[in-house]
Image 1 (cartoon, rainbow, N blue to C red):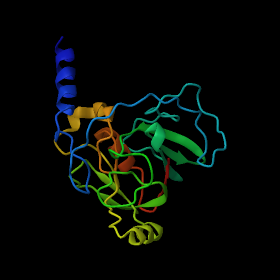
Image 2 (image 1 turned 180 degrees about the vertical axis):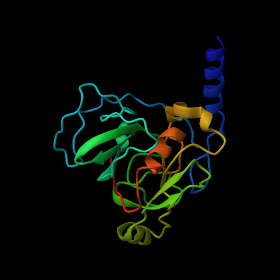
Image 3 (image 1 turned 60 degrees about the vertical axis):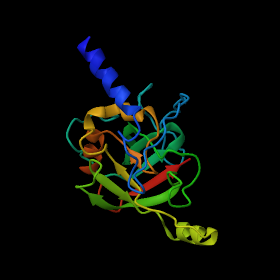
Length: 213
């Protein structure tokens, strides 16, 4: 009974605007959205070449099981599949770890401007690490690139920035996996604090990150 009450309180808090704040661009809380479950295809290399993975491997599960703070292997790349709300850590041509994530509050389409609350699409790099982010840890993404800046200039808008992989707002880590109930950031990729700790210990500056629609 007590566990049920705690769970109910946590979920209720998620429905209150401002409890989970959107990420670095403008700090406006996202509106809840209803997600339609999406079938997960077999894991494969980023270019679509199949690889062998355990049948029925769920998200947020280690393919090569490791319980250390870091994954103990240097990444080839990170891949974010926006439609599946999934981030995969690739090393040695294999999917080592997958994470369920939350995205920007308007997740469809490539980010074009400040405040559109979209998560980018395309190839970028992790270009900075922030151990003192207002969200638990932060791995900064190299958006906007030259093409993004040129596109925004042609539209007469600010391309925006401050796109990160990050954890939950400081002091709200107890929300845990329930944060994935809706897309609540302003374009960032949000994870639980435990998950971002694992990535933060494993991902160096310069790691490629590809965002797929």
